[in-house]
Image (cartoon, rainbow, N blue to C red):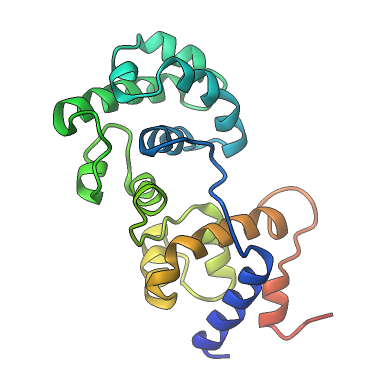
Length: 208
């Protein structure tokens, strides 16, 4: 089966399952989204959503976060992995937003990736969800499923992102990456339970 045919099947299935996918993280604006995505590294969105309401109540803006004591931030996020480093990064990132961007979240990949604790994936999520700029953030679900669906070699997330951008329509990137994440969590978890990838079954001609 040609890759173009595989893409058509995948997009059809994802659209039927998740016509209006939403980002799993809870946020109210670009700043809280940036913080939430940065906190989600090496932990689950569910855990992030459990700790951010109190954190954002205490520091809903870059100015207020920049003035918080690092230990206080860490206390709010102590149940997350790498909480000490993440607390340091949130405070420093907020200070950098004030110094470099007047307290606002910048609308460019380069400026975002220059902030403390912000990598390419985090910047991509913020650009896509806060500013509606085409991006294709690749998480473990997307990396794993793209490999299983024979759309990428799966050597690394950078290569997977390039392949995803090349194969899927640019005007659909922001939606499709969320659809694949949701699909991976529901139908093809990496751990626990019997894995059943209904898209893979269709790609392989097994519709039973």
